[in-house]
Length: 139
Image 1: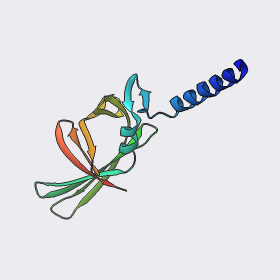
Image 2: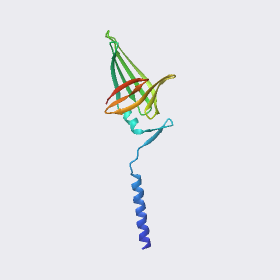
Image 3: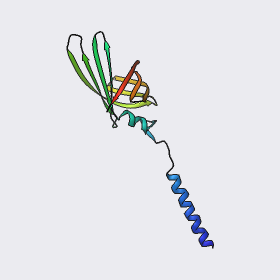
Image 4: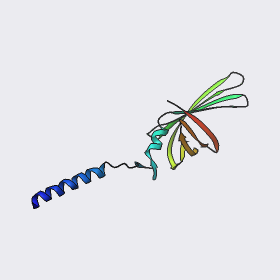
């Protein structure tokens, strides 16, 4: 009887142990000495973010790509009122600076901040260097 009881206790402990391993938890990752949800990074890196606007008769289109390896691409197209078009691509390294702020380093002394980030309904909103932005996701 004692042996049977010990076997039952062993099985019970194993089942409880297995159940505790399958519990739902929020996945945390540590980057640059800050803790962030991996889900935010996954969503940020899942698509190209695009915004267009008109200023002084010129049409601007900006596209941001964030990659999981902490690099990114900033594409800027300007269609001038006189028909001239310019396109420039800038590369940057990025990191979470806070739970809702990204630091984008284009080169020595050339840093931009995307703050108050909110990703929802295929939209990335926030403030890019203190200018309010509304990027739409492009898959």
